[in-house]
Image (cartoon, one colour):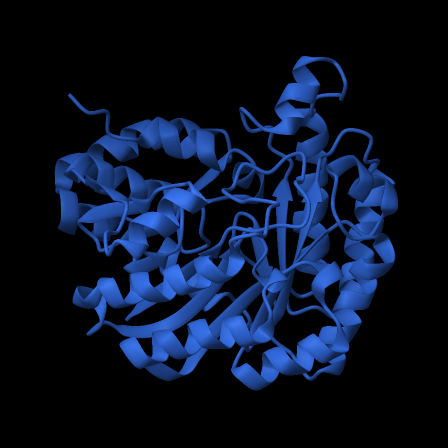
Length: 376
């Protein structure tokens, strides 16, 4: 089974930290929807693939009218064999969520939300240049719950300069008070080329502090555990049976198809991605040409991606999977390299897996990269 990702590249406001592809100009929104529908038609070779999940990401998909989202869902269902219980997720911003829209989204088949709250505090939201207020952060959850949705997630960001430990703890306490089923939490990352990166370089904003972020992460891990959440991926926590099916499939290396500008696709052998330019994407699709690039993955690429994604998950690296796909020598190499982290208490090794300890989770990316197979 595969998943579908649809990239909606529009936002009302540019967050200072964001490096995803988006535009705050909505002039071509209608043409974009038609172009995405046309891309689905053009990629007819994919249409026999059974689909388990559909994910609307961005950008801000909730900026669309419910009818436009319904048109895209119907196009997918007309073109693919979609499971009757498919998970259909809509990324949404709090300021877009109204009682009327929530009911409309439910009617058209949305059954899971990912709400970009980021913080329940005005100071944090202003610092990030978010479009919503702290009151809307709270109201959005209440509206979704009142509409009858039980499967949803909220995003929170930690480790921002000026965010005290007390305020971070309060953010988590508020989230848990709402009895949320899923929580995604991300350390603020300063991506090159973003507005935040420029402001830090020009001394207009303070840089992040790794010690502060580590402290916030440790608090997050402990408090989520106390609240009954399963830490099933470095940034993701869920009550039992509420994990994101779409994201779990991605981390497990399942194939997925991406539609829209900047959207990526993966079939187990190759990775493709569409051009990150709205007008160029639309004009190319209108000429019946998909503006994509392709990377043919080497065995080294596949191994390294497996190490990166599996180590981030609670399931860990499978020794059997390594030997069955890349041979005994690669397992021996990984065992040799990972031993230092076992000694440091950051990795646990058992008969068939390597998994991160709570302490090791904050260092996941660094540990994974040290295990990569370097190309000759």
